[in-house]
Image (cartoon, rainbow over all chains, first blue to last red; front, top):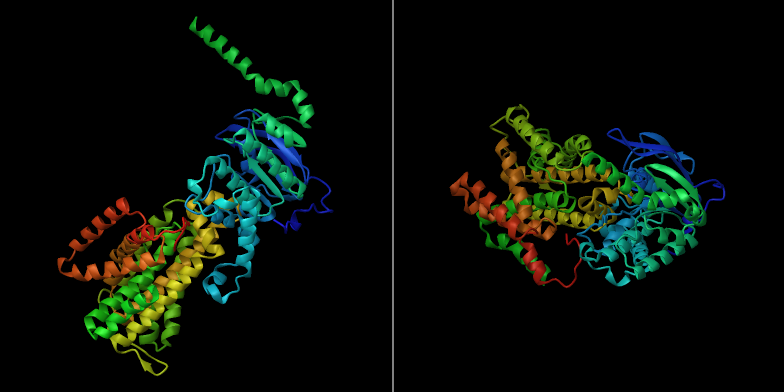
Length: 281
Length: 308
């Protein structure tokens, strides 16, 4: 992780690193997200929150190329990336983690992170077939990158374990290590704290802030307000597939609409019950 | 120790001076090349091909037509044969490997059946009779006419293929392929170009199968379509599964076992395919990583991922 030079913010890129403009995604006619627009400032940690079903996962899937938007576009450094396949988006410097762990179960933790370092190397099929006839410098560099990334998330001693034998907390950290090993400019974190206990969550928050200190741009998707509010410099709130508000953590927390979208589920419940009561009569 | 043991096993057929033993050993060496090729594609990269016998056949006919009938240099003919097999794989792989799942298995099954028909009916392949009168070449003044000399060439080829497979698997692209096998979506978001990787490894392993076919034609000294039909694709798959689909050594072990058992079961005819089928089922249930996993579990000191 010592050589994170590419992560420093380009002076020319004074505007947003990434800009989402009017993003709409329909699944069979139903809008998962609708007219979503926001910017990600370079070198900052932005939070993306919202109740379940508010479109957080769809947004991150669109940003990483797993879905294509029905309407709208995503610009990264001014380039429209909305129709690029995932590996091209990764190559531009955007890497994500998954809410439901998607580790390479049969590979060791270390090998998982080595795959994360894939974009840091160049050797292709021809070089691979040559074997020892080709110098091992690149391979040694990738191993060092993987060791550093594992060390960074605190899994330094677990490298030899197969990924599917790790605890779910360790698996989350391994997802993070794998993303870090790619040395992306922008990391999209899909609920990285899910299933972590309080101590692990605190540790995760520290790691995320230290990534920001290194000049990384982070988008943290979570529905736990406390983690996001403690680390984010600005927060986007989604509700019902639309942007409810964008602001600093203080502004967002004070916004009555945000409180309603989270706590208002009681209201919905009451209304449903009332409706059912009517039909029962 | 292991090295000396392997060397001894390779040398036995030569020292025996027995033509039959050398012939079986030669078929095992060719089987090993095929099994290692399919092992990299199926076991390591997770892409199943039923057309390996077709690629083997394309390599065999091409080499024979170019070398025996048109007098092209033997090694050049082998290379063109391998290249043509790779070209066929590339053309079939490009559309099918854009899709995920078992489409390659289905497409290659169709390809295998189609190419088998071509072998039986085309003029250039000699139709159902095949091509006779193949004479083993003389290379750098050394005649490979004797099956013993030709066996040495086959062993050298097998060792080279095993080495290339080993390097490939333990490289940056090898890890990318394993990642595709484990989770193609996760590999993609980390920058692995899954389609390109799948098409490439399918093409490379088809080229290796084509090379094996060219070598086989000169081992047997004649070629005919029944050597290149679906039965052989399935026999190679059984080698991979019986030996161990995640290990090159396992694939070689599977090739040796299947080749010897095929010889022993020669008299039972068609029944041998029933026996293959039963074997594969038993191994898949009780030893999903093949016979080699018995040895690996016994000698395991680390819990590393792939062992190929």
